[in-house]
Image (cartoon, rainbow, N blue to C red; front, side, top):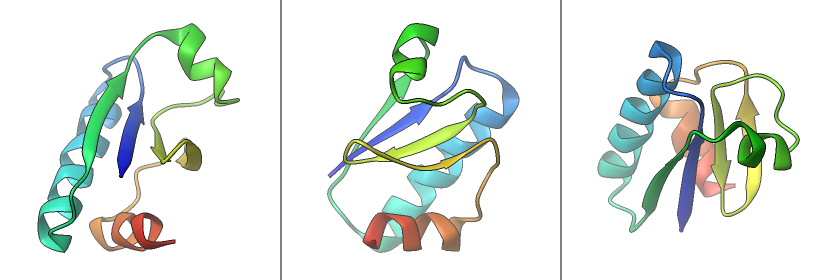
Length: 77
């Protein structure tokens, strides 16, 4: 599973990464978590507001910080 955190490094982006790592650890799933900071790459996903979470190439949430439980649900969709 590939999880991507889209954002330029703002506090909200950092928080989303932290919560995503926590959700993955709690679920015990094997996931590669990467950060995408380049504006051009972020825009290629059609994301205009960050932070955003991408699960296996599909944008699941953008512009807000989901809870750990919400992230777990997004991972399992």
